[in-house]
Length: 191
Image (cartoon, rainbow, N blue to C red; front, side, top):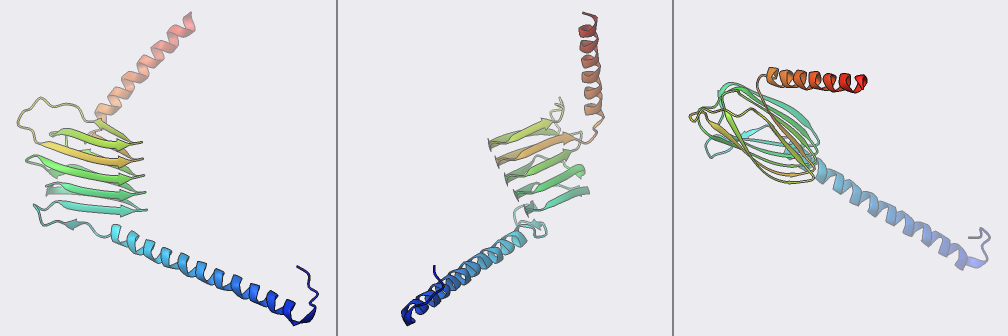
């Protein structure tokens, strides 16, 4: 665009173009600002304090772009509903009082969830996962009277890890695996 202006018509065209650009920038800024405010409200809603739902005192945890450690100490646990988006949640039930079967329902997208359970419970996991992983690291219990924690998951790009209260079992397993690996290494060196 030439800066030389011949007559009034050329000058008017340049000024109108600048005004149109300015209007476009203002509209774009307003749209982005509105989107950011809506996202902030959604994140605040998800990161609210856990609520007890009306049906049998089931805890609700909702997280968005956040992390939280929840530990239930010497209180009865009646179940939980977990909703996460791009978050991390550790639910420690190792000292919770679980006397009957309970349900934990997890709906998560791009998150990580860790659940620590007491040693005296069984764990049953049903999963509807897409690009996700669910690991049950709790050893089986032969006691028919032991309560069961039923974990139902709907995941997209999420990792869920369920483990027992005492990590000594896992440590002993890792030590056995390490010793087996050393034996393999020794035999390879001998040959």
